[in-house]
Length: 209
Image (cartoon, rainbow, N blue to C red; front, side, top):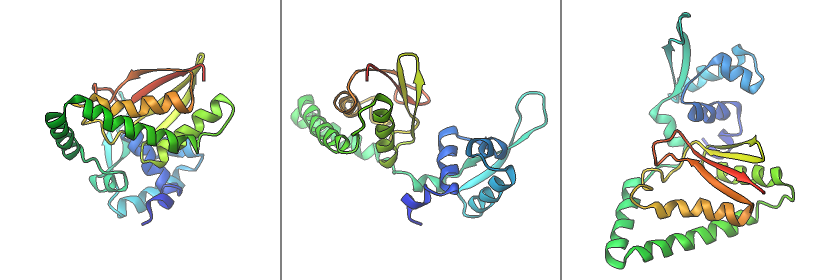
């Protein structure tokens, strides 16, 4: 399976949405993708056959249980793997040998390269166009991301982060996305939720873009 092509298909989009929501019913997915529930169930049957999705009963209030679908551990292989422990160990060794400034210098370099690559793809002249293109860049890098309109700007949400397990010990990791936001879309941004701090996602308020 070619992962990039897979996520462009209906089944791939269902997998990405289940990753974002954690679980959903066939009816909810059908409404989201403007498909019939039967069409979605057909896709779910294939995903279940391939070991990527499992079905379970969930009670929502006093009504009868709803059949919900969620991803299996096998589906995690479709997404970028998290090498949190190894990365944390490497950064810890660098910090012990050369000090905190060495770690900061490493992430300064990573951030600068990320900015250069992102600038090549964020070329829109209008605010929403910039945010939409940045969201696409994040998605193409394996982050489950989306944006929405808020009063005076936008809310950028990252539902997944390959480095969330490292941030508590090495907060320098987060400097990359902050620098990318500063130098590619401009304006002001403020992080209002963090996966590393126990949140369900990383959220950034973007204003004055």
